[in-house]
Image 1: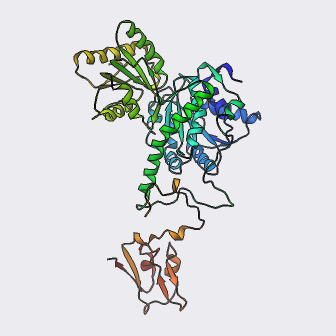
Image 2: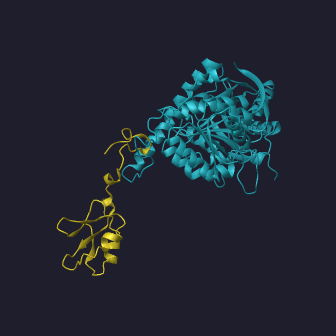
Image 3: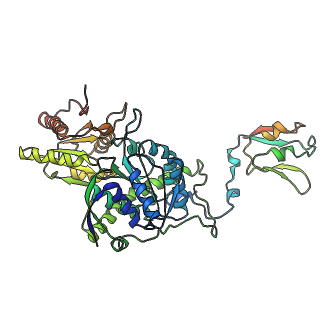
Amino acid sequence: MTKHVGIEVSTAVAEAVKLVDVDVISAYPITPQTHIVERLAELIANGELDAEYINVESEHSALSACVGASAAGARTFTASNSQGLALMHEILYVASGCRLPIVLAIANRAVSAPINIWCDHQDSLGERDTGCIQLYVEDGQEAFDSTLQAFRVAEDQRVLVPFMVCLDGFILSHVIESVDLLDDGEVKSFIKSKMEPKYRLDPDRPLSMGVLGGPDIYYEFRRQQEEAMRNSKKVILEVDDEFSKLFGRRYGLFDSYRIEDADVIFLTMGSMTGTARVVVDRLREMGKRVGVLKVRVFRPFPYEEIYAAVKGAEVLAAVDRNIEPGAFGGVLFTELRSALYGCEKEPHVIGFTAGLGGRDVSVSDFTTMAEKALRVLETGKVERAYEFIGLRE
Amino acid sequence: MKGWREIRTGSTVLEAGNASECKTGGWRTFRPVIDHKKCIKCLFCWLYCPDESIAITREGEFEVDLDYCKGCGICAKECPKEAITMVRED
């Protein structure tokens, strides 16, 4: 039976990993991810979870161990962020290229230097081309539910790519929230207790994985991988649909709040979305037609679906918790603007960077961004396409 | 050649001992040519070849296995009798 509990979000993620009966975990501690794997190590030590926990000397080794385990057919999990995730960079391509459905929890943290342990999305967005699904959650319940969903999606034969569940470091990972925890029986009705891979390393049936692919075939493999990412959109929705029928919660590729008749729509990722909704409600009371769309699945980027949802608006304001030095703007902003360019109805797209290195993205920040977006609505002109919010000049 | 829809997921090869199917001779720019009159059958080329591409025929002659020889030229460099010349492929 579902238990309604107050629980640290990291612990809730660990509970989800336990409930899917993961076989192998290999991880290296890094704040603010550590509580997730600490809790899992504890569950194994207590005998509550029957899994192998492989201690390693770095994140590079952690993901390498996961690659081996997953190739052998084990349901595999790891977690990291920031510099640790950067150290996994090389192996992420191996995992996705070998089409291994490893699930990773990323407790988003800024990347050094300067040394900073607090939240922004630079670390995982820096890995956006590695061929992993990336999903950004807003709260503890979504973190728990998405972790369960991640294994189903990643292991689907139409997908078979690694899956990153990204949750804001500290803002989510270290906060105690009210979460409905599903029990063993409920989760068993949703996901099989063993992975059923098409191919796996087996001494009785020798095969090779990750072999040489020269100029005559490498390109074809990469295109196949790209197709799997595109297909995953459909599978994410199917799994979400089934999840909602079983447990009553549905998330979709993105979440919309008061956007149906909106002139101005914020696009957000992660925990800042709640603050955006508060500001949207205040502006609505003042008669301003404003809404917010939370991008949940960032890879694959659901550009067609987002276009269909936002094409009625005049101004889109993308809020990026990242910075791309020398680029046209933040990651979400450039992605969105590029996806909408040349569409039949092309809203104005403006971008803001905010909340780097754990700086709060406040109600007043969103109010400032709304004022700027509303000015574009009034004048029909974009004076500055990309700005920094909450920064001391 | 198979298109991207037909190839096996994740570059997995189901047959064991399949490296011999990967014929790397196409990478070659220069081909070693052995002058059998100069060759003293010392086996240096056979020893130094990094790709086991020096074959010894039943008659005891040395031949280059052009299916795998990448044309690195190590055999030509090491041959004490300068019996091997590298000739540009057409």
